[in-house]
Length: 156
Length: 156
DNA sequence: ACGCTGAGTAGGAACTTCCAACTCAGTGGT
DNA sequence: ACCACTGAGTTGGAAGTTCCTACTCAGCGT
Image (cartoon, rainbow over all chains, first blue to last red; front, side):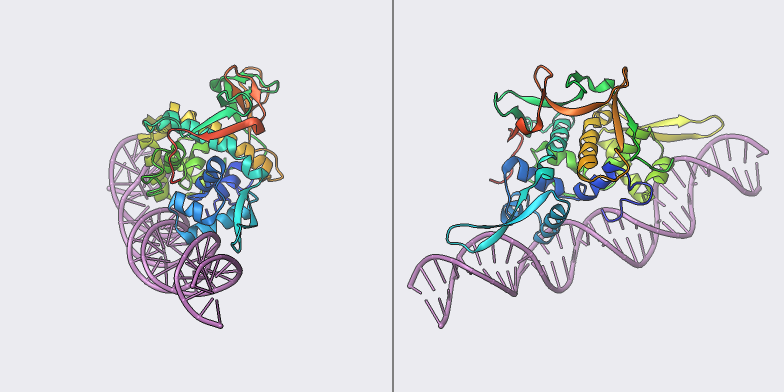
């Protein structure tokens, strides 16, 4: 998204996030890294069927945005190559993937069941995304109100 | 995103969701509708600075996807016009906006503070998105494990 | 009849994406 | 030393999108 952020929207964290995440393929690359643990150029290419020049561009942007870390690796008897692993910021996108995936499961069902299952690492019990109050108590979504914060500024 | 869903990805609800949400401007339109209550062509146009032909296309897709409802309205002494209001599925995108916005506030700070504030409609207390278990108890994000579900199928 | 307003269409330039073929560097085999 | 192989890209041109500006079109009020 070339200049999605202009004077009126640059303060909005949604717009700024979409600047990097909103490009075609970006979130799918993050999905592959998160759900499948992929990290290599050829793996992303094969899994997504993305054109190599576009993949180069997306990986570069994700690295620049601090979502992926470009790091060298060496497989036994191979020369050094590079791979792209999720940073802390990249792993922090899990709720974004979770929210999109939960919405899609309900509102654009595939008939094959959910795409991703979120579970408690220790108990194996399913978990889901929800709004909680300061004490960590769940709140029904329709009791949540959104108001524009100081960072939101769009002509009006 | 023309054919982001091919044989290997069509079962994935993330890919299917991005087919409609991943287009440039789509989520920003939803943001305007959700946070600012906008519903009219000219309002979206002015707020986002989007080209009218692209806006027409996005609104049409959002309507087709069941996120917006195209409905006639009539202002006093004006002729009938159309507006686009969020459907139930559209309002259900709140967690998606919340997740993106929370990520952006932390990982792409603007220096102006958060873009959106989520509060309990009744108490006015701030709320946030979190993973919860079946009983609605919060779970730290790093204790959540994601595994591909039946709907996830991508070459591997 | 005339101008105003909101919701769009039209035309062409600029930019992105797609596709297929090609490069480039090190490694292992001979 | 030479050759084939492999992963990570580049390159060039066609196809598809987005941008920008100007224009249309329908009904209302005057």
